[in-house]
Image (tube, rainbow, N blue to C red; front, side, top):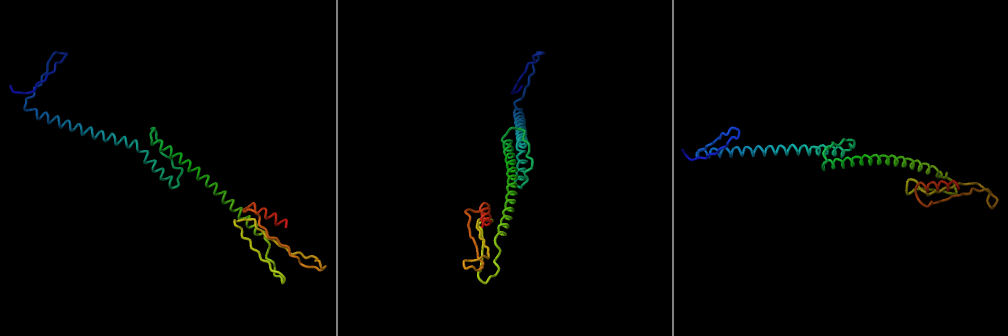
Length: 208
């Protein structure tokens, strides 16, 4: 007998009609229920969406933390550390591939550097031996004589060089028919420096 809202629905299979009557005084309660239900659904959807985004981001960005740990190990000299595998074709996979190429390049560079260092050490050792031999080929200090003093100093610009000096004394008959000691000496500077000049210096000293 009062005012209200009426809605109805006819069932096709049996022909019945269902009517729903809501008195005017119940509108506020129904509206409140609908609003509360709507808010709950919105909050639930927001929480679910946030969880989905969080899970996807963790799954998507998880290799980055492993790549960061691997690169930190590489920076400390561990070039054999294994980079994480990235299945999805993304920028992270490209980044991982770039780091892998960089890792291989660093390993090859370190290997070449060690090989070069070993060759350099071996070469320096050989040059040091050559310098020792070169110094051993220089004439010994002249024993004290009452008639002459001889002094010599050789200081090459590099470990070995092309400077040389040598002397010897030979007793022979002079122009006056008397026997005398004759001093023969040479001072030379081979053009150039290093091993090639030292070899030529050796030949020159031998010829003298």
